[in-house]
Image (cartoon, rainbow, N blue to C red; front, side, top):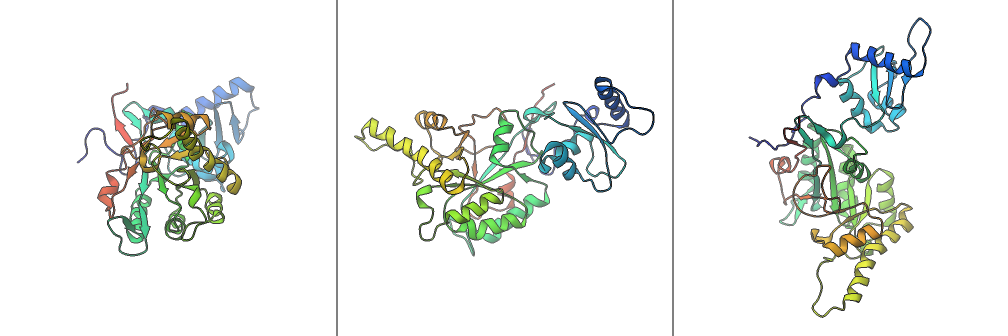
Length: 346
């Protein structure tokens, strides 16, 4: 039912079997690493053999893919590196595993195509019913159940930016979930459901609205940030920054743009003690002047509302986001989850 450029709905094709570390290949790497760093006396091999690019370990009873990733890669979320490199999903004591210490599929490139990362933009979520401008909490939870059942993983904006820069390797079914709002539903409805399913999201806020009646507070945003959620900016008042009234003085317009881009950074740094490096264009609209100001103030990426998924070579100041339709069902969700594009790259 899908065209040649299609989404992996569960998991991508396995890596080339020549990249899987079968026992003979493990032995090869053991000998190669030892050849670079000396030799060991006859007997059992050491538990860990390490080079600049690879660690070869013997699995212990208390080990899991996650704990090995935390120990050797500094991040339990990189367990998929070990699983994919070795062609395994489960491990058991006594196994020898090769752990890549650096990304080995830069840009998600494979002989049969390349990875793309969908970024979803959710509309307002309401407790019951939903309207033409909102999504019910029940429908949102159905989406989360589908994503969880089919092995999709949320990633942070920092990891997404690192993927674009060929500095990180993401899970095959990686995606980013976003909200453009400082309204209470983000904290009261979306946040608890996301935590229940083990997901995080990026919340782009108009900083001038935080703390107002019926809006989220800085303390609540701090709680979300501590739980792994990204807090980005969408200006001071979330107004379309490309709209310029007739007769507006160019110098005054530039000054206003600069304030809409720089002031949210200062507010987030003050209240959340973290640097804001990501910006969602209000209404998805941007232009060259806005992008130049983002770069001037150290933003790493800007997010539009242009539908589509994102390969590593996307313009990082025009990252695509797919706005989900109100009352969208699982079919509509699936249509916005392209994680791989088939192409002959051999």
